[in-house]
Structures are given as C-alpha cells and as structure tokens.
Length: 157
Image 1 (cartoon, rainbow, N blue to C red):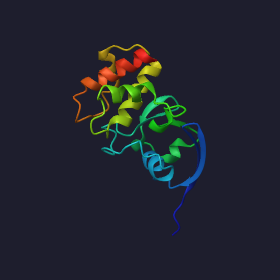
Image 2 (cartoon, rainbow, N blue to C red; image 1 turned 30 degrees about the vertical axis):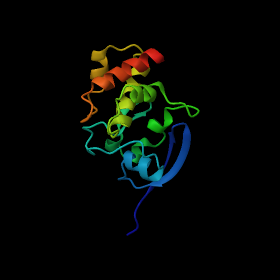
Image 3 (cartoon, rainbow, N blue to C red; image 1 turned 180 degrees about the vertical axis):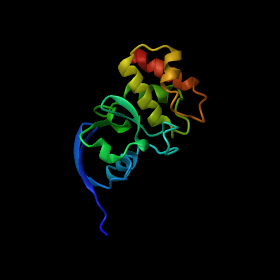
Image 4 (spheres, helix red, strand yellow; image 1 turned 135 degrees about the horizontal axis):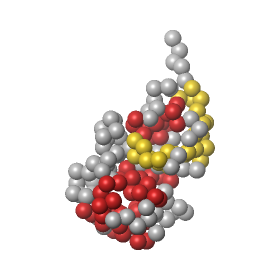
C-alpha cells in the first residue's frame, strides 16, 4: 500500500516552504532532514532535554514532540534564523565569549530558550535565567557560564 503524505506550508526563519510530509514525521526530523537545518539537535526524543528547542509562533517548544503536520501554517525560528546579515546574535556572541558552549550539543536549544526569555524579559535576573533554561540539560558547563552569557547578552541588546 502506498505511503500517505500531507502537503504542508510553513515559514521557517522567514522563508516559506511547501512540502509533502509523512503524517508521523516529527518537526525535528523535518527541520534536520527535509530543510537541512541541522543546528537543532535531537537529544532525548522525549521532550526532556531541550536540545531541540525552537520558537514556533512566539512560543518555545520542543520540536521532537511536534508532528510536522501540526506545524502547517506556522512560523518557526531555529538557531539558524537568529543571526542577521552574517552577524552573530548577541546570545551567540556571549556564549562564545563566556565559554558557555563546551561540547556545543545543548547550545542551540539553550540559546533558543534564552532568546525566548530575553524577547519577553530583556533584563532578567540570574534566577530568572535559571528558571528559563530549566528545560534544557547541559552536562558540560555546570550552568554558571550559561547564566553569565545570557546576562551579558541582555546588557548588549
């Protein structure tokens, strides 16, 4: 029997896409495999680690928990879409300067969570940063350098 697909339309990082997708394909797999946006990482595949965090319609979400068909008509921003005109986003710059990206695997999701925070609270406290990134796991940094980077980026904005 032929595999069924559904045509979807999404806007990712400001670019419109129209694609045929399997109803069971995760948004994470769609971004990585169909659009070749490999910055978004798969960690746990269960929405527990935050490595796949993206912003969809202004909300921070775990892309591994969303089916691509559920993203039909939505606006999505990934780590690839936050820099402008070949200039790093202040968060990307701060993560590099503060040593907040050790192995780098959690970094895209961590930056997207931090971006969501700064979009809603441009002057957070360290406690607010910790709460905002609580859904993102890092096994390398101990979080201190990540908090420092987010607070530094907040000052730069």
